Image (cartoon, rainbow, N blue to C red; front, side, top):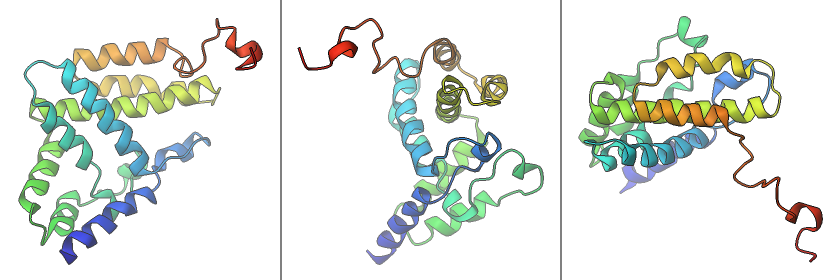
Length: 191
């Protein structure tokens, strides 16, 4: 039981581990945990759009995909030119002594290998999460955010992810809450 508690504290470290790439845009910040949550929700959606994948397995992959970053930190693309994290060792160390260690190591290895249909969908969810974040920055006028989007698009592998990406970029990140045609915005709830 103590080892499970330690693991749950370690998972909490992702709430305090910043996604490091945003420093190059000079705007925005998110933790690895913030990213993982939305990536997992995207995986939930995307897996249900894909024929022949195990949606629950995709969700498990998305949920654990960045766990090693509690130990390695988040290395952005510039960092990765010079530093190679030992994610396999981090996965072994973080799962050691857990009753589900083999499952955790297997999920992380599968995600890194990007060979199964489920891991490909989970990777697409990871990239779509970044694209959504970029679109939010684009809509706020953050210089440079649109420069990153072609590279994210090139990482997507499923047609459904590519179609979602097109819709994200063609849309408005505030459209879910801000109905510009509504009279609500004139007087609110004041009749």
